[in-house]
Picture (cartoon, rainbow, N blue to C red):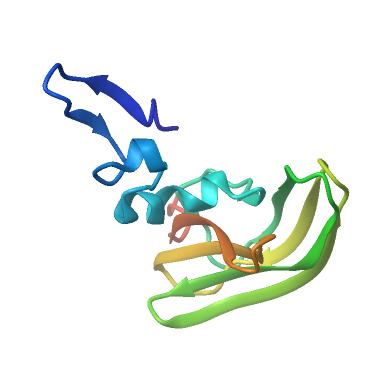
Length: 148
């Protein structure tokens, strides 16, 4: 979690912040910073509840994706979970979801880790209230179990 958006003000007017010049008055984010934090501030958001860095190929996993609605209106739409290795899609499933106003829920995805090894990207996505994509991403390396 980022400590602050406006952390230090120098007497000559410089700040250590993430706003464009003159942006504090206009509250206009620096675009590269916004690109990386937009999903965290989305009023309809999601989070893959999987924190391991590795998974065993061929094993089954029940993955939970937490949805949160900070809006005072309900939200509904598809939530997609996918696993990619480079440009190759190894797994993709979509579940229709509904969220009450100011509500949250967990979606359960059944995943069998593919029979391959190496780095992968696990990604959940929904279309937020502004119809723009909101993502949660985890880097996972598929490793065979250690030989005993």
